Image (cartoon, rainbow over all chains, first blue to last red):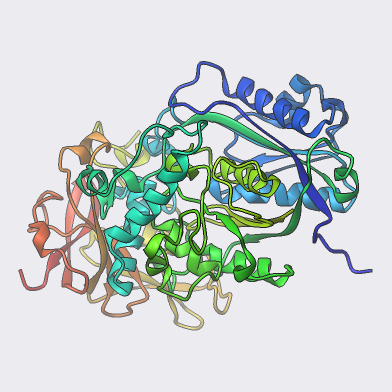
Length: 383
Length: 154
C-alpha cells in the first residue's frame, strides 16, 4: 500500500489567548495557555503529547513548553523557517509524524509579543549580511517596502489599483467586525478612511499592512482513527504542501526571471496533486495577509483565477461572505491579529466545525495558506 | 572596528556588509564601475552573486563591468517609521533597475538628481516604470562607494 497523508490525520483541538497590542504575560506563559486550551478543547491530557512543531522564529522552545505543560516523552519535534511561511508547515510536519508512526499527539503553536516588542527591521545587525548588502543601504528597510516594490510592478503589469487592495482590506475588516476576539472588532473601515490614510511605503498605505499583536495560538493533531474519540468533530488534514520555487529570493524576489510568481505557485501544484478536489471545490479560504497585495498573488498562485487576474477577482464582493471565495473569516492578519498566520489555521478549523463568527453556510472544505513572498506552506482541511 | 564592519554609521545610512561572493561588486563600485558576476563555464550572468552556477554548477566565475545603463523596473516611496538616517530624507525613492545589458539582472538603488544628492532629490513625478537611467557612484562613508542612478533624460 502506498503511503498517503490524505485524511490520515485531523486537527482535534484549537486554543488561543486574547489578542491585543500589549499583553502583560510572557511569550512562554501565553504559549502554555494556548496549548493547554487546545488540549482541553480536544479532551486530551497534556501527558499524552509526544510531538511538537513550531517556527524557527518562535522564542519558546520544546524543552520549556514540554516541562511547563506536563508533556510525556516527546519523540518528534521540528521547527520551520521563513517566518509566516512556516505556519501551515507546522501542521504538515505533525501530520507527517503522526501518519508515519513517529508520534501520536502533536502540538503546533506560535506565541509572539510583536505588539510589545521592537519592530524586527530595526535590528540592522541581523539584516545586513546577504542579501541585505543589495537592499538595505538604499533604504529598502522593511518587509512593507520589499512587498510594495512587487505591488507597484504588479499594478503596472496588470492594471491593478488601490481599490483592489482596499477590497482585500475591507473583506478582512468586515469579518473582524463580526469577531469579538478580533483586535479590530469595533473598528469599521470605509473607503474614505483607506484612501486618506497615511502611506507606509507607496503604493501601500497603513491599511495595507497587518496588525502588531501580542498573542498565542495552538492546534492539536492526532490520527484520523484517534480523532473519532475526541471531544470535538475532527477537521481532517486532507493535503499539505511546502513551497520553495526554483531561483526564489524571498520578499526581494526581484532577481528571478518572473518575480510576480512566488512560492504559492509551487505549494499549490503539490497541494492540488494530492487532493480529491481543486480550487473550485474550496468553500472558504484563509489566505496569509501580512500585506494586502499577497492576496491577489495567492489567488493566482493557488489557481482561483488566472495570472494577473487576482486583483480583478476581488471585485463585486467576491471575498466577502456570500461571494465567490470568502476569505479570512475571523479578520486575518490585517484585522483579527498578526501572529504569523497561525490564527488563519484556527479559523479554518472553526469554519469546518461550523463555529465561526462569520460562518460560511455548510462549509466542508477550507484552504489555509502561509505567507506568499517567502518559502511557504499550505493546508487543505475538510470536515 | 571599521565602520564597514559595524554595518552602520552613528545614526547614518546602513553600509553594505559584503560577503565573500559579493565583495567584487563593491570593489568594482569603488572604481566607479558596475560589475556583474558571470559563470566562467557557461557565461551566464547571475545576481546576487553566489559560489557556483545554478545552470552548469561550475565554481569558476568572472566579473565584468556593465554599461551601467538600465530602466526602472519598479519603485517605492518609504515613509516613517524608518531608521533615523532614512526618516530624515523620507519620503524618498527606492528603485529596482533592470540592466540594459541583461534585463534579467535587476539592482536595487536610488534615483537621485546628482551622484551625491539626497535620496529625496528627484521630483516624485519623474518616477516612472520604464524610465531610462544611468549609473553614478557616491561615497557613502570613507572607503564605501555605492551606486546611484540618474535619469538618462533629466
